[in-house]
Image 1 (cartoon, rainbow, N blue to C red):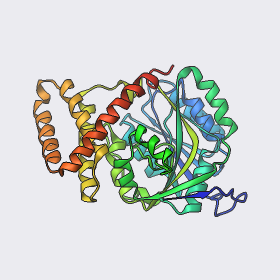
Image 2 (cartoon, rainbow, N blue to C red; image 1 turned 90 degrees about the vertical axis):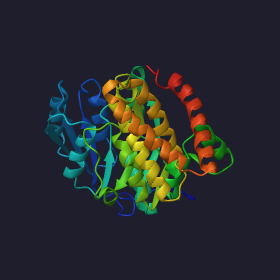
Image 3 (cartoon, one colour; image 1 turned 180 degrees about the vertical axis):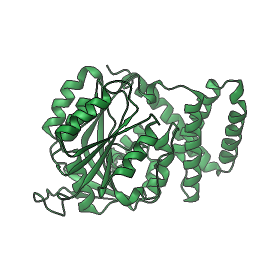
Image 4 (cartoon, one colour; image 1 turned 45 degrees about the vertical axis):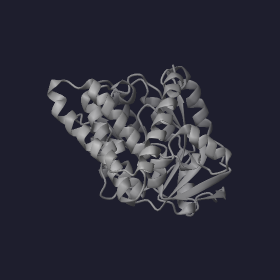
Length: 354
């Protein structure tokens, strides 16, 4: 891992990525109250050479018309109207339609800093990494106008960029906030190595996605591909700067969905990433947390016709945990309890934002 000083590129230079086409994929579904804020932040990006792909996933409100209106006034925008197939299917449609050498995703109710693509692209092209990422900030609806103004001003350049290898290991082992804070104080740049499953606030080289698509008609579609993506990356470049603003909406799937299928899909995603980590000799601490937690919620949500699936999930997880060495089991369990304590604080401070 190395942190290098930030060097501003010459305007339009190839090294800085000024001529690169970046495809930004935005799945859109019933977002009429938020969509214009998101699209304004995209069309106002300081990096101008964009291909903005809006995938209207069968919206039942005016979202489709809003997409068409923006496309009519900006030739960088294309709109795909389709029957509702879920976010994974919409993201796949965007990937299949994209032409850029670099790929970015954005949720339809979030707001990008004006320099998001510019700075992520420069970090990526100047370091040779497979993916670049930056930091994000959560906000509630009451602050939306203020956040939009702040994002439109554009962030100052960062002091440096941290580049690290083996992102699959970082994904599985660097995820507890309190431990990251301790690592930062010890000068280990642990915050830079934090990776979650989100696809936004990242910029990917196109080849990272070759042969990988999101599972369709499933929840946890981002968790299901996370391990496979990190597995094939040589290095990741981290920009220590807030470049993405994440709206906290009580109606979002992350906050509102409580079905058996939702938890089962998270169990399956956790199991898949758990096995992948073990194949690479990595203790799967994050995936242990994911699948054990989702299994408990799955059991609480289960009805009579779900019992066979629940029993199979329990058996698979039991066998996986039994195959861990004692030291691995201890590490997984310890990190899970730390993360659970952190979640109590997170739920009180973040999920209640208004």
